[in-house]
Image (tube, rainbow, N blue to C red; front, side, top):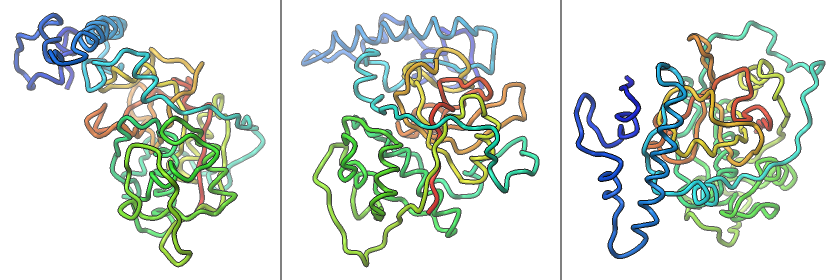
Length: 323
């Protein structure tokens, strides 16, 4: 359900469906006023967010499918602050996909719609909070799903273990999905269950466990630049399971719902997420993307990104694991 015009949409998180509000950009900023600290900084960021949101939505005023942008939990941050906290994935070079290389076992016609969530192999959306470890959340989610697909048991694994122990990354200060997968593949580290190594939202000392303790290690991984081969990306998704991808997510600060098809480029990889499925049944086909900013962001923690044009660079660095 989408309300129009944009002036109501940017206030959507504060409105009940079908209700009216007396909030305006001027008095909405009062929500963030704190006479004790940082009130003016937050108010300034909020005013700039509202201007930016108005611009985003004006580009697709009559389109009920294009992404809708509005006030959310990040609106009190400037784009620079948002990027410094939440967009800490570091790019890694991956080989370009060669058309002659086929993904065996995926020669059957691709379905119009596919989502690994329907098969009960995707864990609940997590919240990385102010820890810049999206790279760790992304690969752990992929490992959880790969294990569930193979063993028919869905386990929630420790992200904190990867944050603390992946020595070729920087914990909550950033990292690379490819570097983390290479570390896991070389060391055969077994990821323990989340309750045994809880998320702390900061980098700590690596904890080690007995060889006899339960854990899941990867046996292999693949990584490709599929920027010109999103059809092969669909095959890879179906064959291997949910995919870890790295995107340009600067404009995702303001995302509420709908299909992202503008407002981001493939010029800078800065945020790691997971593709769980796709939907080609409507007029605009889209990838179904799981984020790590909690279930209150986007569509219950997910975003929809247009397929076929490498929107946000979603196909620039695509990886998957086997366990």
